[in-house]
Image 1 (cartoon, rainbow, N blue to C red):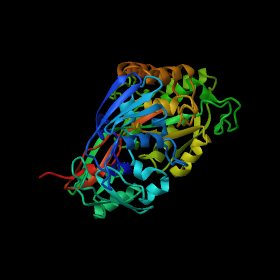
Image 2: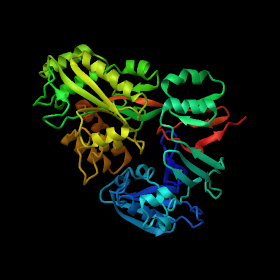
Image 3: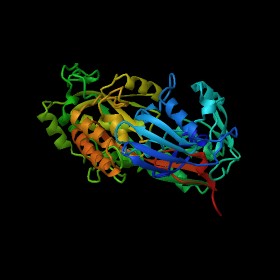
Image 4: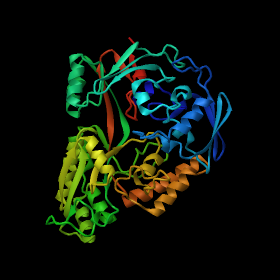
Length: 476
């Protein structure tokens, strides 16, 4: 998110994640496995040197080869077999198989300077040494834990930046963020707490912006191991058979969750119950897949049918500082599961610890969130529920190690379709299979909220990004 101030992508995303021209003025599919991008002329890097196709090719080669990368973008370049420079302002991207999602992938990959990026480490970018971009702002400094400072780029090729200097302060506590805004210490904040929303709406000195997001909050389940570390029988003893491997049990857990109650009471109206991995208004989702209705009676019947009439024991792990009301949501879900006989404990912790342990597969049931960076459903399908395969790059965030070969085939077929229409149809088929099998349990989509001092405006974004170039003075 912070990179968007300094760097550009070939393809931009608007506030609804529709794809619009960025560093590329246009693009077209020359063949099922070949895309051509026409680059914008006259764009300069912060040091005055021209942006050309050589920078694009360098970026594609670097993305997956950063030593000890804290967050690799290699997943977006793995599919490339060749990056051909036709001329300084034309580049062709080729893949082994047909690939209809190239513009989507190019909307999340930041283009970096070849001149400053060759032999540059992550530390060189963090220090500012290699932080040379084509974006609306220039990087000044990063003081870890305190601030990130930018100044305007007067030579920016797009709409001129409004602010001479911008200071971003990491205030991780929601109460502290709201207090800082009300005290006038900051002008603009993201994600105020739900409990503060009523007062903020009534405050004449505050303006709010909000939009439904594609941030899915969901439960990942260990549906892979025969013995799962935090599954017990009703008496609290470890079990040799993992009930979470049974789709009837997974469906019972889903039916036990009253998503409307969570939306109304825990989230105070700032969430939308979810039945699939992205909102149904997004292209290539399945409009008629709705959130499971609350049905405790049917949930208990399914448990009994699966061989657990007396339920079993479970621990739900989650973060307490990452998503809106994450700890409260965990507590609510645990209470609901306990009502159908699945005695559920809750353990929450800071997100840095939680994600480290989650990635090491230390949990049986965990509450997590996911937002599709590309703005389309094959992104979460591939990352969250496709079979984990480090070589292919699939299942990279599949912390439950769900695996369904039939589903995998459908996803692979969809993402290598010849046309976007074929991709959409295949993606919908895959979505139906995995949601029928409950490879994960969707809970809700968050509603994104920003609060700012009166006199400012912001175009709320479905991708949650706070883009400083989009904060403006309100027109009088």
